Length: 227
Image (tube, rainbow, N blue to C red; front, side, top):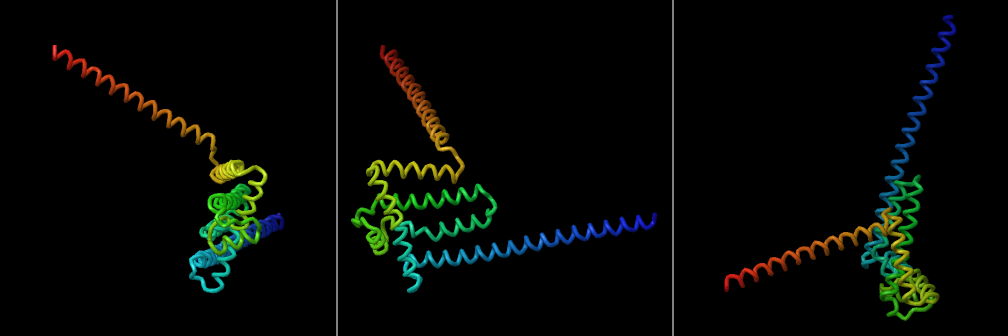
C-alpha cells in the first residue's frame, strides 16, 4: 500500500516537473520571439529612415541610386513609400498569425498601387510616357507621375475603358480597399452622411420658416400701429 502511494507521488512529481518545464520553455520562446520582433522593427525603422532621407537628396550616392529606383517604380508615391513600408511590415510582424491582418495588408498594398495610378492619371501625361522605359525615366528624373507601376496600370485601364472608365475603376478600387482596411461600410457611411445633410437642410428650412413668420408678424404690427 505504501509502495503504491509512493509510486503515485513520484508520478505526480514528474508530471508537475514536466508541466513546469513546458511553461518555462514556452515563456523562454515567447521572450525570444519578442526580442526578434523588436530587432526586426528597429532594423525596419532604420531602413525606412534611410530611404526617406534619400528621397530628399541627403542619403549619399547609394541613397541617390535607391531613391531614383523608388521614384522610377512608384513615382510621386515614393515620397511616402518608406513610411508605408515600415507601417505595413510592423503591422505584419505584430499580427503575423492573423488572417484578417493579412487581408488588410494586401488591401493596403493594393491601395498604394491604385494611388500610383491616380497620380499618373493626374500629372503623368506631362511626360508623354508610353513605354516601361519612358515611365521609369520620366518618374525617376522628374519625381512626378506614377512610375512604372502606376503608368502600366493606367495604360491598361485607359486602353481598355478610356480615361473616364479608368477613373471610375480606380475610384471604385480605392473605395473597396478603404472598406477592407477600415472594416466600415461605404454605403452606411454615405447613408449616414446623407441623413446628416437632410437633417441639416430640414433644420435650416424650419429656421427660415420661423424667421419668415417673425418678419410677417413684425410687418403686420407695424401696419396696425400706423393705423
